[in-house]
Length: 597
Image (cartoon, rainbow, N blue to C red; front, side, top):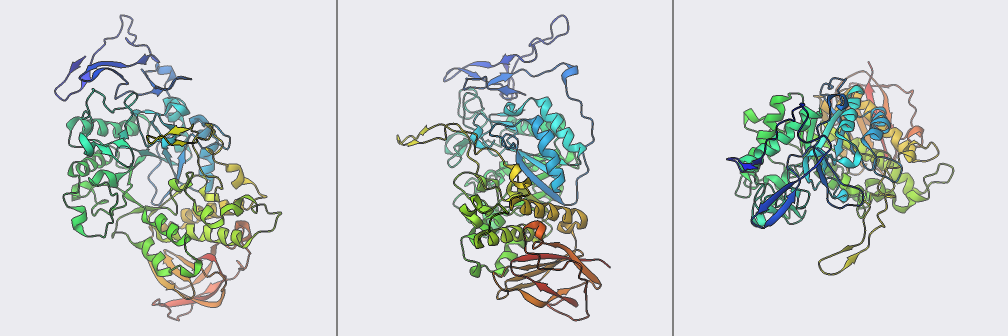
């Protein structure tokens, strides 16, 4: 091979005399390099497919160039970007109710129609880029240009994306450009026998918490590699955009670890900022929007970097949305406290604390909370009662009643006030009772301590969609509520409405009232007090009707509200609003009133 001016090794192999490729499609290929640290076998950095043979540990690079008749041809146009993003975050491998690694084909046929029915308009897929270690959740990438072979072939993935487009769903990819696996056999680490080929040398090139390698974004060739990678997924696979993982870690040399951001500009524009990485983010957003103006770009940033969502030509980093990560942390903080301690003003402040005109994707709980050792919101609320008292033919418990009521309220208030987009990790819409435990064997730590495994079992690495569908379980009501909430947003577009106003956050009553568009949201977080003739301020005159009621029997509630009642406004100012109407607000309920005429 020859080495070019930028450090890239390459070789050109002309076609055979009959026009066929010098390397047959499906051949195993590797690069053997005589490096400063000895002879080393590597998988090509740009490999398009990589598989792990049964019984083997290392992956094999595959020369992937199928004949024309085997290539998948896209049939359906990519959908237009919706005003409001309602994202269903999913992982292909664990998307089956059965204890196995699910396939692209099964996800296409079984899960995509479910996502559509639930009312989401985008699916965000994790763990697409090839990763040797399944339990890394896809975040320790080894082959950046190869879709994971555990779930099927590249053609299967294209077929999945095309089917999603047919259903009108955007397909977003959870892309990892923030770090790389430190695997030297399958990945980029030590590719040419040195520590610095794609990465910074020394401590700066190692992420101490993630145990992974960190890119040198000042290197011309690293920029080309990553920019090409972003374009590859958009062009070859027709992804509709990306959720960039670990952006906070990229933008600061301290990676946002052990660091509290207060909003002081010195924290954002100081010597701790990795300017090369911020420039890379500007470049990749410019490339994405320059080639595909409709593509969606979401950045996972906890720091609140100013200009994050300002377009690159205006001097910004160029993302379309910031992932609003503080909300999920706030819910965990509150769920550790008693109901009496919840501060309504604190909830509203966290949900609305974002920069002017910066679009945010919000979520009530993250996918990490579903992992073994952590707790989802449903588990914080109901704990082990979920295993014994979710059948409708058995009496409930106070903990279950409280849990189901608050699960619905938390999701609706997060969607109602938290941003212009909403994200849910698969299974959480119905309060999935089991955590995720990837198959693993026993592990010996450097200290000599042995961590027991789970016998490489897939029993806890699946999603029990059958529980959400079972009409004899209480999970069904939670799923029905999430579906109704998504369809309400589809009908009214309240997440992106111009008009939004919080008129009440009452600490004694535990009530939050706000307007978005033509809707008025009334939340009563009080554990025992229901209020009759409770006055609700509003701006628009006319007749209001109940559009969504978390207490509906369909959603596992107690049906304390009559949905046939009309609510007429009076010219009676209340809570700084010019008009108002009176309602009955039962304890632990969320009700949305819609202006009908």
